Length: 272
Ligand code: ADP
Ligand code: MG
Image 1 (cartoon, protein in one colour):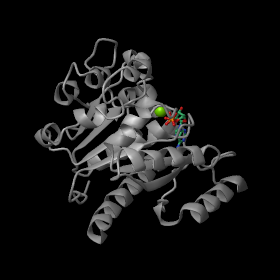
Image 2 (cartoon, rainbow, N blue to C red):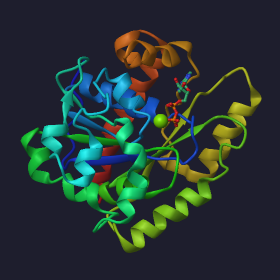
Image 3 (cartoon, rainbow, N blue to C red):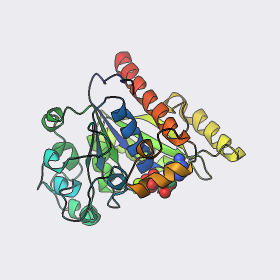
């Protein structure tokens, strides 16, 4: 595809929402794949012990594989834990293995437990791999793993499902983000909201979309991701929807969303 602009500084984007099943992982891997397809170099960090992002990127994540767990406990460097996705030479992933499941508890005892990911993600290691974008896929909780992701990032992207109770729990997420901004990471902002799993046949979906736009304004991407069978089938083949069915509506909508993310990033930097 045509190249998208490289950001003027590397963007580290945490994809968070403590609700499960809202499209965090799907949005992470497909936005990352879309940016990679357009010439950008993208690293996905899988921070969910389920390892769904690793699966969708076709990256090995059996227990024992060098993973984000070893990075957090300090046994392995970011560079050594990074694998290349078989879907693009520009697309990288630090996988999550089931070993990450116990880490919320292990981290409690560790020094600088909230900033271990930030400390591991040195600009040296990311420069060496020439990474333009880092996406961090969070688990469905507000525990220490998500806190590590918020401390390590510049931006938060919140996927919101166009469904009942879409906004429920968002207040809690936003107040956690404010706490991190106040105490641990002044550089953090909620830059992007992405509406997902939109079903145009229901009135409800439009109501939710309107409500989210009224509440959050310009940070909501114009592109809405439709509910699509292809999107949900792709991970079963170890693929993003961009690899699985590039011409599908789901794939094209993620490409549109990624273009908005890339363009906004440039505007955002120029304006600030
Ligand atoms: P989360 O990471 O927030 O838990 P996922 O990205 O894993 O959410 O999505 C939850 C489920 O919904 C998965 O089975 C996924 O394949 C499916 N899904 C996500 N986005 C879509 C979509 N646009 N259309 C259809 N199914 C989707
Ligand atoms: Mg997930």
